[in-house]
Length: 447
Image 1 (spheres, rainbow, N blue to C red):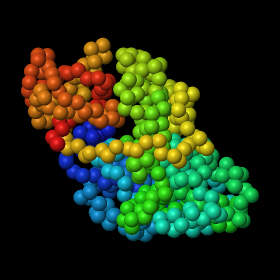
Image 2: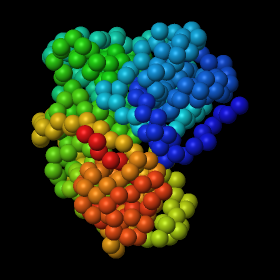
Image 3: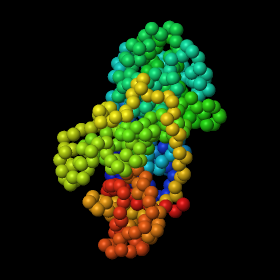
Protein backbone atom coordinates (compact mmCIF):
# COMPACT_ATOMS: atom_id res chain seq x y z
CA UNK A 1 0.00 0.00 0.00
CA UNK A 2 1.35 3.44 -0.99
CA UNK A 3 2.33 5.57 2.02
CA UNK A 4 4.20 8.40 0.32
CA UNK A 5 4.03 10.72 -2.71
CA UNK A 6 5.06 9.34 -6.07
CA UNK A 7 4.43 12.47 -8.18
CA UNK A 8 6.45 15.67 -8.28
CA UNK A 9 4.78 19.01 -7.56
CA UNK A 10 4.96 19.84 -11.28
CA UNK A 11 3.29 16.57 -12.30
CA UNK A 12 0.59 17.02 -9.67
CA UNK A 13 -0.13 20.59 -10.80
CA UNK A 14 -0.55 19.39 -14.35
CA UNK A 15 -3.02 16.69 -13.29
CA UNK A 16 -5.03 19.22 -11.28
CA UNK A 17 -5.22 21.60 -14.22
CA UNK A 18 -6.26 18.84 -16.60
CA UNK A 19 -8.92 17.44 -14.26
CA UNK A 20 -10.87 20.71 -14.21
CA UNK A 21 -12.08 19.93 -10.68
CA UNK A 22 -12.59 22.74 -8.20
CA UNK A 23 -10.60 22.16 -5.02
CA UNK A 24 -11.26 23.42 -1.50
CA UNK A 25 -8.49 24.61 0.80
CA UNK A 26 -9.21 24.13 4.49
CA UNK A 27 -7.58 23.61 7.87
CA UNK A 28 -8.39 22.10 11.25
CA UNK A 29 -6.73 20.92 14.44
CA UNK A 30 -7.62 18.75 17.40
CA UNK A 31 -5.86 18.01 20.66
CA UNK A 32 -6.32 14.36 21.63
CA UNK A 33 -4.46 11.37 23.07
CA UNK A 34 -3.14 9.31 20.15
CA UNK A 35 -1.45 6.12 21.32
CA UNK A 36 0.32 5.23 18.05
CA UNK A 37 0.95 8.37 15.94
CA UNK A 38 2.80 6.44 13.22
CA UNK A 39 -0.07 4.01 12.66
CA UNK A 40 -2.53 6.92 12.78
CA UNK A 41 -0.41 8.73 10.19
CA UNK A 42 -0.32 5.71 7.86
CA UNK A 43 -4.07 5.15 8.16
CA UNK A 44 -4.74 8.79 7.26
CA UNK A 45 -2.43 8.66 4.26
CA UNK A 46 -4.08 5.54 2.83
CA UNK A 47 -7.58 7.00 3.23
CA UNK A 48 -6.81 10.56 2.14
CA UNK A 49 -4.62 9.66 -0.81
CA UNK A 50 -7.64 7.90 -2.37
CA UNK A 51 -9.67 11.09 -1.90
CA UNK A 52 -7.00 13.16 -3.69
CA UNK A 53 -6.20 15.10 -0.51
CA UNK A 54 -3.06 17.24 -0.71
CA UNK A 55 -1.55 19.23 2.11
CA UNK A 56 0.74 19.49 5.11
CA UNK A 57 -0.39 17.56 8.18
CA UNK A 58 1.38 17.04 11.50
CA UNK A 59 0.36 14.32 13.94
CA UNK A 60 1.69 13.64 17.43
CA UNK A 61 0.62 11.91 20.61
CA UNK A 62 -1.13 15.17 21.50
CA UNK A 63 -3.29 15.41 18.35
CA UNK A 64 -3.40 16.61 14.74
CA UNK A 65 -2.77 19.90 12.92
CA UNK A 66 -3.82 19.94 9.25
CA UNK A 67 -3.76 22.35 6.34
CA UNK A 68 -4.93 20.74 3.11
CA UNK A 69 -6.90 20.87 -0.11
CA UNK A 70 -9.20 18.33 -1.79
CA UNK A 71 -11.66 18.17 -4.69
CA UNK A 72 -14.91 19.83 -3.68
CA UNK A 73 -16.73 16.67 -4.83
CA UNK A 74 -14.92 14.68 -2.12
CA UNK A 75 -15.63 17.07 0.75
CA UNK A 76 -18.45 15.12 2.41
CA UNK A 77 -16.71 11.77 1.98
CA UNK A 78 -13.67 13.32 3.64
CA UNK A 79 -15.80 14.69 6.47
CA UNK A 80 -17.43 11.28 6.96
CA UNK A 81 -13.96 9.79 7.34
CA UNK A 82 -13.03 12.35 9.99
CA UNK A 83 -16.21 11.48 11.88
CA UNK A 84 -15.03 7.88 12.25
CA UNK A 85 -12.54 9.18 14.83
CA UNK A 86 -14.40 10.27 18.00
CA UNK A 87 -12.05 13.20 18.69
CA UNK A 88 -12.62 14.58 15.17
CA UNK A 89 -16.37 13.97 14.92
CA UNK A 90 -18.17 17.19 13.86
CA UNK A 91 -14.87 19.07 14.05
CA UNK A 92 -14.91 22.65 12.74
CA UNK A 93 -13.24 22.87 9.33
CA UNK A 94 -11.86 26.32 8.56
CA UNK A 95 -12.48 26.82 4.84
CA UNK A 96 -10.06 29.28 3.25
CA UNK A 97 -11.27 32.80 2.50
CA UNK A 98 -9.77 32.64 -0.99
CA UNK A 99 -9.58 29.41 -2.97
CA UNK A 100 -6.72 28.27 -5.19
CA UNK A 101 -6.69 24.85 -6.84
CA UNK A 102 -2.88 24.75 -6.53
CA UNK A 103 -2.58 25.75 -2.87
CA UNK A 104 -0.97 22.36 -2.11
CA UNK A 105 0.75 20.00 -4.52
CA UNK A 106 1.78 17.09 -2.26
CA UNK A 107 0.27 15.08 0.56
CA UNK A 108 2.72 15.26 3.43
CA UNK A 109 1.79 13.73 6.77
CA UNK A 110 4.57 13.86 9.36
CA UNK A 111 4.85 12.45 12.85
CA UNK A 112 6.18 15.08 15.24
CA UNK A 113 6.76 15.34 18.97
CA UNK A 114 4.18 18.17 19.00
CA UNK A 115 1.63 19.48 16.52
CA UNK A 116 2.88 23.04 17.19
CA UNK A 117 6.47 23.71 18.22
CA UNK A 118 5.82 25.66 21.43
CA UNK A 119 8.85 24.65 23.49
CA UNK A 120 6.64 23.99 26.54
CA UNK A 121 6.71 21.11 28.99
CA UNK A 122 3.05 20.15 29.03
CA UNK A 123 3.50 18.11 32.21
CA UNK A 124 4.08 21.29 34.22
CA UNK A 125 0.60 22.78 33.73
CA UNK A 126 -2.98 21.88 32.84
CA UNK A 127 -3.19 22.23 29.04
CA UNK A 128 -6.98 21.75 29.18
CA UNK A 129 -7.48 24.87 31.36
CA UNK A 130 -7.83 27.12 28.33
CA UNK A 131 -9.01 30.67 27.84
CA UNK A 132 -12.59 31.62 26.98
CA UNK A 133 -13.43 31.23 23.27
CA UNK A 134 -15.04 34.27 21.67
CA UNK A 135 -17.03 34.49 18.45
CA UNK A 136 -16.49 37.39 16.04
CA UNK A 137 -19.08 39.77 17.54
CA UNK A 138 -17.89 38.99 21.08
CA UNK A 139 -14.29 39.53 20.03
CA UNK A 140 -15.17 42.91 18.50
CA UNK A 141 -16.97 43.96 21.69
CA UNK A 142 -14.03 43.07 23.89
CA UNK A 143 -11.66 44.88 21.53
CA UNK A 144 -13.48 48.13 22.33
CA UNK A 145 -13.08 47.61 26.10
CA UNK A 146 -10.31 49.93 27.41
CA UNK A 147 -9.30 47.19 29.86
CA UNK A 148 -8.42 44.82 27.02
CA UNK A 149 -4.95 44.08 25.68
CA UNK A 150 -5.03 42.26 22.35
CA UNK A 151 -2.02 40.17 21.31
CA UNK A 152 -1.14 38.72 17.92
CA UNK A 153 0.24 35.22 18.58
CA UNK A 154 1.73 34.93 15.08
CA UNK A 155 5.20 35.69 13.72
CA UNK A 156 6.61 38.93 12.30
CA UNK A 157 6.13 37.99 8.65
CA UNK A 158 2.45 37.23 9.34
CA UNK A 159 1.47 40.34 11.29
CA UNK A 160 3.28 42.69 8.90
CA UNK A 161 0.71 42.23 6.12
CA UNK A 162 -2.42 42.14 8.29
CA UNK A 163 -3.57 42.28 11.92
CA UNK A 164 -6.22 43.56 14.30
CA UNK A 165 -5.93 47.29 14.88
CA UNK A 166 -4.26 48.05 18.20
CA UNK A 167 -2.77 44.58 18.66
CA UNK A 168 0.62 43.95 20.21
CA UNK A 169 2.68 42.30 17.48
CA UNK A 170 5.73 40.54 18.98
CA UNK A 171 8.87 40.85 16.87
CA UNK A 172 9.48 37.09 16.75
CA UNK A 173 10.38 34.44 14.20
CA UNK A 174 8.65 31.52 15.94
CA UNK A 175 5.66 30.92 18.20
CA UNK A 176 7.79 29.62 21.08
CA UNK A 177 9.70 32.94 21.22
CA UNK A 178 6.53 34.96 21.75
CA UNK A 179 5.39 33.27 24.99
CA UNK A 180 8.09 34.57 27.40
CA UNK A 181 8.15 37.97 25.69
CA UNK A 182 4.42 38.48 26.19
CA UNK A 183 4.55 37.15 29.75
CA UNK A 184 7.26 39.64 30.72
CA UNK A 185 5.76 42.56 28.80
CA UNK A 186 2.33 42.15 30.40
CA UNK A 187 3.40 40.91 33.86
CA UNK A 188 1.92 43.92 35.67
CA UNK A 189 -1.51 43.39 34.09
CA UNK A 190 -2.20 39.82 35.21
CA UNK A 191 -5.09 40.91 37.41
CA UNK A 192 -6.50 44.11 35.94
CA UNK A 193 -6.59 43.54 32.15
CA UNK A 194 -8.35 41.22 29.71
CA UNK A 195 -5.72 39.29 27.75
CA UNK A 196 -7.22 38.77 24.29
CA UNK A 197 -5.34 36.59 21.79
CA UNK A 198 -5.69 35.54 18.18
CA UNK A 199 -3.82 33.55 15.52
CA UNK A 200 -4.53 32.11 12.06
CA UNK A 201 -6.81 29.18 12.88
CA UNK A 202 -6.82 29.08 16.68
CA UNK A 203 -4.33 26.31 17.39
CA UNK A 204 -1.55 28.50 18.79
CA UNK A 205 -3.96 30.26 21.14
CA UNK A 206 -5.23 26.92 22.50
CA UNK A 207 -1.89 26.19 24.13
CA UNK A 208 -0.93 29.82 24.79
CA UNK A 209 -4.13 30.58 26.71
CA UNK A 210 -3.53 27.61 29.05
CA UNK A 211 0.08 28.70 29.49
CA UNK A 212 -0.86 32.26 30.46
CA UNK A 213 -3.55 31.08 32.87
CA UNK A 214 -0.90 28.88 34.46
CA UNK A 215 1.33 31.95 34.75
CA UNK A 216 -1.33 33.80 36.73
CA UNK A 217 -3.27 35.81 34.16
CA UNK A 218 -6.84 35.98 35.45
CA UNK A 219 -8.84 37.02 32.39
CA UNK A 220 -7.71 35.12 29.31
CA UNK A 221 -9.69 35.04 26.06
CA UNK A 222 -9.04 33.77 22.54
CA UNK A 223 -10.62 34.21 19.11
CA UNK A 224 -12.49 31.00 18.30
CA UNK A 225 -11.29 29.52 15.02
CA UNK A 226 -8.77 32.31 14.54
CA UNK A 227 -8.75 34.84 11.73
CA UNK A 228 -10.17 32.35 9.22
CA UNK A 229 -13.34 31.63 11.21
CA UNK A 230 -13.61 35.29 12.26
CA UNK A 231 -13.70 36.32 8.60
CA UNK A 232 -16.37 33.74 7.80
CA UNK A 233 -18.58 35.04 10.61
CA UNK A 234 -17.95 38.66 9.60
CA UNK A 235 -19.19 37.94 6.08
CA UNK A 236 -22.09 35.70 7.12
CA UNK A 237 -23.41 38.08 9.80
CA UNK A 238 -22.55 41.45 8.25
CA UNK A 239 -20.20 42.36 11.11
CA UNK A 240 -17.53 45.04 10.77
CA UNK A 241 -14.07 43.53 10.29
CA UNK A 242 -11.62 44.82 12.86
CA UNK A 243 -8.89 42.85 11.11
CA UNK A 244 -7.22 44.79 8.29
CA UNK A 245 -5.10 43.62 5.39
CA UNK A 246 -4.14 40.06 4.49
CA UNK A 247 -4.03 36.86 6.51
CA UNK A 248 -0.75 35.00 5.94
CA UNK A 249 -1.26 31.30 5.12
CA UNK A 250 1.27 28.47 4.94
CA UNK A 251 0.60 27.22 1.44
CA UNK A 252 1.39 28.24 -2.11
CA UNK A 253 -0.88 31.33 -1.83
CA UNK A 254 1.13 32.84 1.09
CA UNK A 255 -1.83 35.04 1.95
CA UNK A 256 -5.56 35.59 1.54
CA UNK A 257 -7.14 39.02 1.44
CA UNK A 258 -9.46 39.94 4.32
CA UNK A 259 -9.93 43.65 3.59
CA UNK A 260 -8.69 45.77 0.70
CA UNK A 261 -6.33 47.68 3.01
CA UNK A 262 -2.62 47.35 2.21
CA UNK A 263 -0.62 48.04 5.38
CA UNK A 264 2.84 46.84 4.32
CA UNK A 265 5.45 47.84 1.76
CA UNK A 266 7.57 46.20 -0.90
CA UNK A 267 10.77 45.35 0.93
CA UNK A 268 12.85 46.50 -2.03
CA UNK A 269 11.33 49.81 -3.14
CA UNK A 270 8.89 50.79 -0.39
CA UNK A 271 5.81 50.85 -2.61
CA UNK A 272 2.57 49.76 -0.83
CA UNK A 273 2.42 46.00 -1.31
CA UNK A 274 1.47 42.86 0.67
CA UNK A 275 2.44 40.04 -1.70
CA UNK A 276 4.92 37.59 -0.18
CA UNK A 277 7.29 35.63 -2.39
CA UNK A 278 10.39 33.47 -2.08
CA UNK A 279 13.69 34.45 -3.70
CA UNK A 280 14.17 32.59 -7.00
CA UNK A 281 17.70 31.64 -5.94
CA UNK A 282 17.02 28.26 -4.32
CA UNK A 283 20.18 28.58 -2.22
CA UNK A 284 18.61 31.66 -0.62
CA UNK A 285 14.83 31.15 -0.85
CA UNK A 286 14.32 34.27 1.26
CA UNK A 287 10.70 35.02 2.19
CA UNK A 288 9.96 38.69 1.55
CA UNK A 289 7.40 41.16 0.18
CA UNK A 290 7.94 42.15 -3.45
CA UNK A 291 5.84 44.29 -5.79
CA UNK A 292 5.28 43.37 -9.44
CA UNK A 293 7.71 46.03 -10.70
CA UNK A 294 10.54 44.78 -8.48
CA UNK A 295 9.66 41.17 -9.33
CA UNK A 296 10.13 41.94 -13.03
CA UNK A 297 13.28 44.05 -12.55
CA UNK A 298 14.89 41.62 -10.08
CA UNK A 299 13.64 38.44 -11.76
CA UNK A 300 11.94 37.45 -8.50
CA UNK A 301 15.23 37.74 -6.59
CA UNK A 302 15.92 39.57 -3.33
CA UNK A 303 19.28 41.01 -4.39
CA UNK A 304 21.65 41.48 -7.32
CA UNK A 305 23.84 38.72 -5.89
CA UNK A 306 20.97 36.24 -6.08
CA UNK A 307 20.07 37.51 -9.53
CA UNK A 308 23.59 36.66 -10.68
CA UNK A 309 23.22 33.16 -9.25
CA UNK A 310 20.05 32.25 -11.17
CA UNK A 311 21.87 32.98 -14.45
CA UNK A 312 24.57 30.43 -13.64
CA UNK A 313 24.41 26.96 -15.20
CA UNK A 314 22.16 24.66 -13.18
CA UNK A 315 25.09 22.48 -12.07
CA UNK A 316 26.85 25.51 -10.57
CA UNK A 317 23.66 26.49 -8.76
CA UNK A 318 23.35 22.97 -7.35
CA UNK A 319 26.94 23.17 -6.14
CA UNK A 320 26.14 26.39 -4.28
CA UNK A 321 23.10 24.74 -2.65
CA UNK A 322 24.98 21.62 -1.66
CA UNK A 323 25.11 21.31 2.11
CA UNK A 324 22.69 24.19 2.71
CA UNK A 325 19.69 23.21 4.81
CA UNK A 326 17.22 26.08 4.81
CA UNK A 327 14.26 24.37 6.49
CA UNK A 328 12.67 26.65 9.08
CA UNK A 329 15.49 29.16 8.62
CA UNK A 330 13.70 30.48 5.53
CA UNK A 331 11.42 32.64 7.64
CA UNK A 332 14.23 33.80 9.97
CA UNK A 333 16.03 35.07 6.88
CA UNK A 334 13.01 37.29 6.31
CA UNK A 335 14.82 39.82 8.51
CA UNK A 336 17.79 40.12 6.17
CA UNK A 337 19.61 43.46 6.11
CA UNK A 338 19.07 43.57 2.36
CA UNK A 339 15.35 44.29 2.96
CA UNK A 340 15.35 48.08 3.26
CA UNK A 341 11.64 48.47 4.00
CA UNK A 342 11.06 45.48 6.28
CA UNK A 343 8.83 46.32 9.29
CA UNK A 344 8.50 44.28 12.49
CA UNK A 345 7.04 44.71 15.97
CA UNK A 346 6.01 48.27 16.87
CA UNK A 347 7.12 49.52 13.45
CA UNK A 348 4.23 47.67 11.76
CA UNK A 349 1.55 50.18 10.83
CA UNK A 350 -2.22 49.94 11.19
CA UNK A 351 -2.68 52.90 8.83
CA UNK A 352 -3.64 51.74 5.32
CA UNK A 353 -1.00 52.76 2.78
CA UNK A 354 -3.16 51.90 -0.24
CA UNK A 355 -6.23 49.98 -1.35
CA UNK A 356 -5.93 46.67 -3.17
CA UNK A 357 -7.30 46.49 -6.67
CA UNK A 358 -10.12 44.09 -7.38
CA UNK A 359 -8.72 41.06 -9.18
CA UNK A 360 -10.97 39.61 -11.85
CA UNK A 361 -11.03 35.82 -12.03
CA UNK A 362 -9.37 34.76 -15.27
CA UNK A 363 -10.63 31.77 -17.23
CA UNK A 364 -7.81 29.83 -18.82
CA UNK A 365 -6.88 26.44 -20.26
CA UNK A 366 -3.57 24.67 -19.86
CA UNK A 367 -1.59 24.61 -23.12
CA UNK A 368 1.95 23.53 -22.26
CA UNK A 369 4.90 23.54 -19.89
CA UNK A 370 8.24 25.33 -19.76
CA UNK A 371 11.27 23.77 -21.45
CA UNK A 372 13.98 26.40 -21.44
CA UNK A 373 14.77 30.06 -20.96
CA UNK A 374 17.40 31.67 -23.18
CA UNK A 375 18.86 34.27 -20.83
CA UNK A 376 20.71 36.57 -23.23
CA UNK A 377 17.83 36.75 -25.72
CA UNK A 378 15.01 36.76 -23.09
CA UNK A 379 13.30 33.95 -25.01
CA UNK A 380 11.01 31.35 -23.42
CA UNK A 381 10.48 27.88 -24.84
CA UNK A 382 7.40 25.74 -24.18
CA UNK A 383 6.17 22.35 -25.39
CA UNK A 384 2.51 22.30 -26.43
CA UNK A 385 0.69 19.46 -24.66
CA UNK A 386 -2.99 20.43 -24.90
CA UNK A 387 -5.12 22.51 -27.26
CA UNK A 388 -3.59 24.74 -29.90
CA UNK A 389 -1.89 28.11 -29.60
CA UNK A 390 -2.24 30.94 -32.11
CA UNK A 391 -0.44 34.20 -32.70
CA UNK A 392 -2.54 36.96 -31.18
CA UNK A 393 -3.74 34.82 -28.26
CA UNK A 394 -3.69 36.26 -24.78
CA UNK A 395 -1.58 33.94 -22.64
CA UNK A 396 -0.66 33.53 -18.98
CA UNK A 397 2.56 32.02 -17.64
CA UNK A 398 2.15 30.67 -14.12
CA UNK A 399 4.67 29.30 -11.63
CA UNK A 400 5.55 29.31 -7.91
CA UNK A 401 8.29 31.92 -8.43
CA UNK A 402 7.00 33.55 -11.63
CA UNK A 403 3.54 34.22 -10.21
CA UNK A 404 0.89 34.95 -12.85
CA UNK A 405 2.18 36.91 -15.85
CA UNK A 406 -0.22 37.87 -18.66
CA UNK A 407 0.80 38.99 -22.13
CA UNK A 408 -0.37 38.92 -25.75
CA UNK A 409 1.47 36.51 -28.06
CA UNK A 410 2.19 38.92 -30.92
CA UNK A 411 4.92 36.80 -32.51
CA UNK A 412 6.11 33.24 -32.00
CA UNK A 413 8.33 30.59 -33.54
CA UNK A 414 7.05 27.04 -33.99
CA UNK A 415 9.72 24.32 -34.09
CA UNK A 416 12.31 26.96 -34.95
CA UNK A 417 10.38 28.76 -37.69
CA UNK A 418 8.11 31.78 -37.45
CA UNK A 419 4.53 30.56 -37.38
CA UNK A 420 0.96 31.44 -36.49
CA UNK A 421 -0.36 28.14 -35.07
CA UNK A 422 1.14 25.52 -32.74
CA UNK A 423 -0.46 22.16 -31.91
CA UNK A 424 0.24 19.29 -29.51
CA UNK A 425 3.87 18.18 -29.69
CA UNK A 426 5.18 21.48 -31.12
CA UNK A 427 7.84 23.52 -29.42
CA UNK A 428 7.16 27.24 -29.38
CA UNK A 429 9.51 30.09 -28.51
CA UNK A 430 8.72 33.74 -27.96
CA UNK A 431 10.14 36.79 -26.22
CA UNK A 432 9.15 37.47 -22.60
CA UNK A 433 10.00 40.43 -20.30
CA UNK A 434 10.76 38.12 -17.36
CA UNK A 435 12.55 34.86 -16.59
CA UNK A 436 10.61 31.59 -16.85
CA UNK A 437 11.40 28.30 -15.07
CA UNK A 438 10.91 24.64 -15.89
CA UNK A 439 8.07 24.44 -13.38
CA UNK A 440 6.13 27.19 -15.20
CA UNK A 441 2.92 26.38 -17.04
CA UNK A 442 1.61 28.06 -20.20
CA UNK A 443 -2.12 28.85 -20.32
CA UNK A 444 -4.33 30.38 -22.98
CA UNK A 445 -6.71 32.97 -21.53
CA UNK A 446 -10.22 32.26 -22.75
CA UNK A 447 -12.13 35.06 -20.99
